[in-house]
Length: 286
Length: 122
Image (cartoon, rainbow over the protein chains, first blue to last red):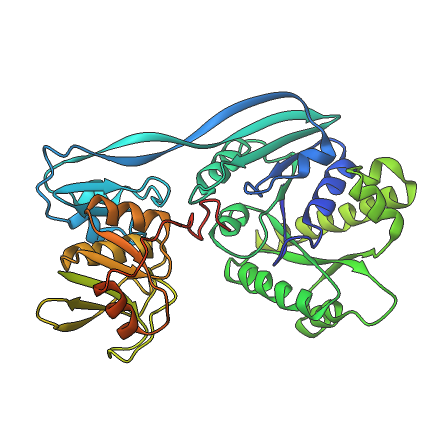
């Protein structure tokens, strides 16, 4: 059972929700797909780390074969190629590794070479297996790293798996949620929070995903994100209070579930709601 | 001698565009014949690598010098490989910059920014 946790912006509480659900589930897998700024490991503190480098293929030019037709330059939507003074220049950092230039080259002057863009780490934190994707600074896209993270975890379908997504609703988020059984959208109780919730709401609808919302940082006063959910008839999975104690635990990189009985109950109950929802959706859709 | 300037409008009265890669137009000005040619910048709406594509346009139009307020690293790499000199514009007016260039009063652009898209320049 794969549960993706996402939100329209950073700092909403994706990692808070993901690591605490993983800890509440005890035997589970946590996958940090926020490869530009992975921070789940700060809370889970995994041990016995094993690493694997992730490479992409980028073009390498043989200038003796290149006849300057510029088909590759015209093809590249990212403008990673330039033809200057009878010489083709490749901008490695701009290349998105689509391989198109190699396909369109009539002279076979372009070949593939490997370029390391980051790594994946696997470790253990109690009964939680922790996977972390790390993209090197300045690289064009973290999608190859996310693909690797999700591919290696594909066989463990019965195990509760929490996918901590990157913020927003761009390609890297789509890659992170596309095979998830359920999406948990985390939202803040502000108008800005509603705007960001709407972004991911539209995304999960587009993907026909089953989903529900966790309202984080809840205060006594009116909650625009809750209002949005009620208007759109979106399932509210749980409410997390805007609470000094929780904030302190979290800012000290502690997992609230392991430190405080109140939060163990809160996240266990949330986990219960989420797993029931997933099973319910699975029955409906099967 | 052909000089290229990123411009906001297709007129000599235009101001210099603040962006090189995403300027709407380029003025290619010939200092000998005093001919002005305005060209559309096909890189303006690029998903990425606008500076590289705009620099390719400079090279293809056989510019000898580029007058711009700023220039990113990738674009500068292309322009320098083509032996085009980059000068820093000192005012907003296109005409004033052409005059200053002809008088030899424009400094070379020595501050190349790292770029805005994940090259450390965010």
